[in-house]
Length: 488
Image (cartoon, rainbow, N blue to C red; front, side):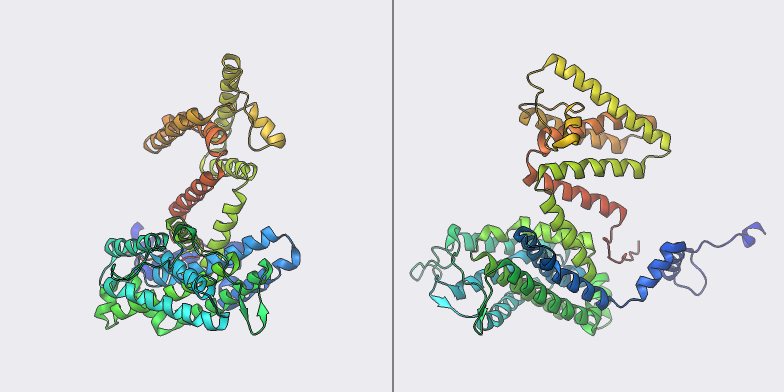
């Protein structure tokens, strides 16, 4: 009788109701109070209004600042958004792991450079070049997709990765190219020197030569492509792509042309990447093959994953968070603040009860002062380094963390020790884990001050990676992505 009267959990299966539907209803019911009210109101707003609001806000950026660096960061962010939109078609909508995507970006940039530079004496205007570049890049995407259309998962990733590396190799060594060795060798790509002196965008008597002009050009192009992607997502093709993403076999059994859908996804994604390449070449007035290698691909993937694969709004949010974070982390003082704030926020969010948080915090502070006192007494001349943070915060860190004057080798060894300490934390439980947490936190501060903060070019990528790892554990679908249903 007690079992009959006990309430049924909201996410439990019910007779006549699909188990997944019941779980979704249960999750929705958990958003109560003012959070739930805001969530429900936002759900009623059409998504195009959010995109329009973003466009208006972005368009006002040059009006609020004349700093060319900030406007250039805005242009780069829009460029990454455009790249992420194209990748979202292949990965987010269709579920295809394309690791050669960035080669289409490079192909578009080089194609524009060849048609608008002294390289071959061609100086066409934008109206003539743009259709040629977009169509040519789309055809290249189709050619890559043709032998890959029957591949899935790791096999598709390997083939597309090979294509991406083939692009870099060919364009880096393209100063001596011939047809199968039967013709005279020609300098096609400029080799390691790339193609310089590229013309700015010009058409119908107008020329874009300023960063602000390219910012607005990138914004207009992005909003047009975003509108096209929104309509495409709502179309039959968009729904078919999502079916393909969830289960290719089920989609094929339902009569969907799976191979054709893959070809279309690759073609459209490549065309968008080629379009982004023209913007890159037009502003930078020079292209080099290393600009289109794996590091750029990783950044675009990070934006897509962080925002949520398959979400158009996630593309915008992910690009803003990642690119702005990378720019902020270029400055050691900024990155140091972010590092310690992230550590503190993680401790506050994870350590309970509060007395445990206070104990760990006090023990870490005490351990730091003790180690600093011992080290400065024993090796006074070797511990006279300075913190990268500067100001009162850096001054405080210099009296807590041991700052070495020659930190390279000790910092490397400490970094290895930190990796093992973190691994040990994941294996321990209870009081042993809490005890080990204190020296691990101090070791993390030591590694940061003596090794990571002095090399921001490497450190900022590490921090972005850490942020992605934490997010993927907390919210695997990304910030604005939709949770996928997996049957196990």
